[in-house]
Image (cartoon, rainbow, N blue to C red; front, side):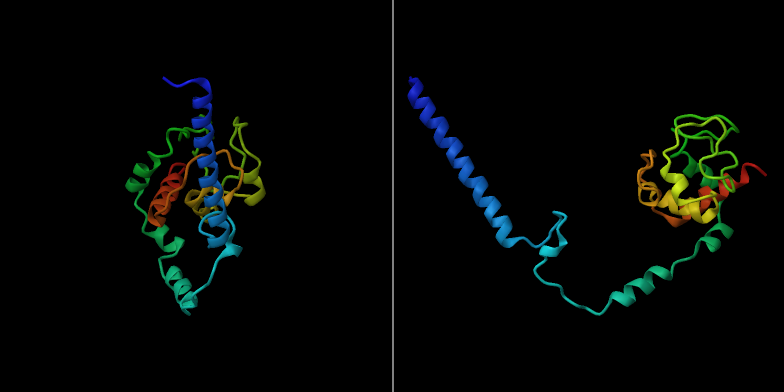
Length: 174
């Protein structure tokens, strides 16, 4: 069939062709880079000014605020939302699991659940007490609120879900 020298030449030719394609791709990326997701926004080719920046911020602020959402909170829906939390948290006082127990969490000092030692230090750096605003921020995006937190949950995106959950947790120690 083929001798060793022929196989070596074929393998070398394939590797050389691959190297040429990779180098061409690299050069093309440098020449035509637009900052599209490589972490370097300073390579963007151009920006189109639309003048809608202020309008976009106003639209974000028009939604109901946390106080209004808490006033309308549904404890039953909050209990259902808690289903996403119960894999790591328990509601019984002092019953720690992967995460600290959540009984009495609203109004409790951050990082102070009795018997729980797995806190990640980053929480205490961003808040003193778990009030409704702090919980809302944390539940929306745990890693964004407290960078370095050990909590792997991605967060609750709907403000109503967060308000329902906070109201539900707050109702447990009544």
